[in-house]
Image 1 (cartoon, protein in one colour):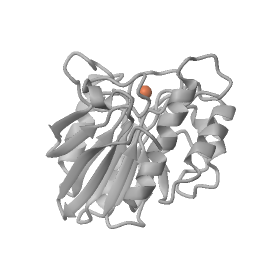
Image 2 (tube, rainbow, N blue to C red; image 1 turned 180 degrees about the vertical axis):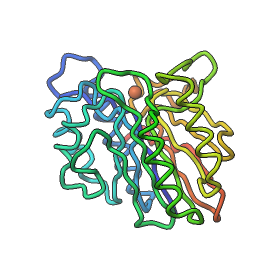
Image 3 (cartoon, rainbow, N blue to C red; image 1 turned 180 degrees about the horizontal axis):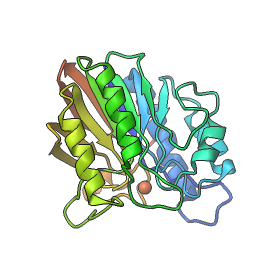
Image 4 (cartoon, helix red, strand yellow; image 1 turned 120 degrees about the horizontal axis):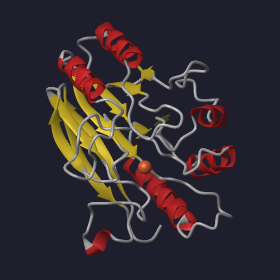
Length: 254
Ligand SMILES: [Fe+2]
């Protein structure tokens, strides 16, 4: 199974005065075109999809994502407004129609996809409350032998001095790590939020954070050849328990 991951596009309205508005739209547009050329089985989007959580931004985001051939699975980031996001994508059957959390499980692929909502209105940090962890534990107990990929906007661990204490309560992050370490079928965790590429052994598996698609807020990618080029990730489940991941740099011109 081949999975593409995009994250942190921070899309702005075309009429925005923000200098990066068109650049960010262009980064996503070019990434979508390149993803289609790779023909993945699915695309996951690990949050911070738009900048201000506005309905108009989501309408524009939908337009930019419309050419994607593969099924798309969205996770909310702290920049997202869950109500506006759910309303804009209300035709997506995997998104829960009500409740406080945009958690879900996708059973349609060779790998079971589990999305955990780490956002809370007005909170920039990751929230891994007991209610959320109970949901995750229940879901993981349902199919203990099926390879499962977990995705969350906020990484539940510190990243050097770039991302310290990025979750509301350290004990919640520790509880999430404990929980996942008890479920051996989890083949990886995919995150966004930090805008910085990181790979880390975590909870008996591997966690990968991808850089932001929006290159004006991207960190940790200094190569000259990459400066003008959006980067996304491709993840391939090579066998039952190994996830091969690579960064894909999009060509300079569409
Ligand atoms: Fe972000």
